[in-house]
Image (cartoon, rainbow over all chains, first blue to last red):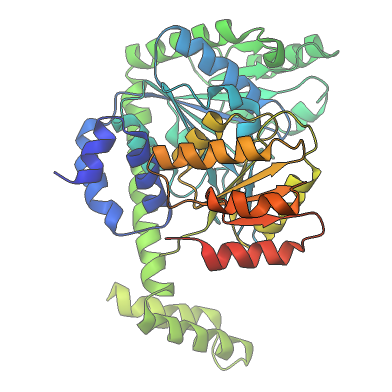
Length: 313
Length: 131
């Protein structure tokens, strides 16, 4: 058996960490290990946490993780922050709110840069969920980058999606009805010690009430003050209720199928892009075509045909 | 295939001055590295466990309290114990000149005193990182 894969299956931290590095770097050495671990995945419940910048996602994750640890559950955390589109570097700071978890051997935290992916996730995140799942984590929490309105890819990967808001957004909630306001399985109004929390909850609930979706489940709105560890026990309970609902209504399988679809598309996309833009035969051709487009010797559509024609034939 | 340099920037011990660490973290980001910043008051155990989980190539320690001879050395020792001797360890802060050789002997490969240019730190890391 693949050495790194067998160590991952035993829960070895260094092997988990190394395999994540390999998938993040698109290293072919990861592929065998990923093939080996796949049959051992599917057990963990994946919680996606998204919300605007500064809404307290990381602090909420810290308290939620402590809640799960009290129950003896093992937790994997994937904390995603944006990669600079200019330098390619990233400052990954979600751990600042979770330092107490660093030495708990039932918790594995990995910070990831988006590395060019839009949508609030990182390209390798599907692989990282599989790795943490195979390593025996019961709960996997995926924290997206602080989102604006349309970064909704987290629903492709999460079994339960939490949208975190803060009081004082006011009418803003009305205007962000689309995008992140459509994806919540549970809303959390964090920083509930601030004024305006009742109004925010009321606005959310009225939004949910006017929704025409024929759902048999009403999206719950919870309040929390994560900094003071208030509301996290209730949140963990609500996540459990949602998990049972998914299982009962067979939505669970639908959700999982969505994840595997997204994962497959991402693998194909990555390989195809790599084939076109990094393989030496095409690389020169692409550069030449870009110059020709600029000189009006060729139009962008004909240029695309010249590359894709060779592959799609 | 692209392998980015991953750096953990941490402040061990009790001093609360993190401006220098943040400036360096930002400079490394601007040089295309992925910087994991864990903030203040880290123990050697926290730093080493984080280095393992994040699979970093470099650990950068910043300390202004004077406890570097203890805390920096604790980190390099623990890294070695955990089989992470390939990780490049660098340090900065108020480090008296006479301490630098001892720290280097203990495995802190680069010491950067106040006044160091950020580019020098970036160059040092790029030159010395082990893959």
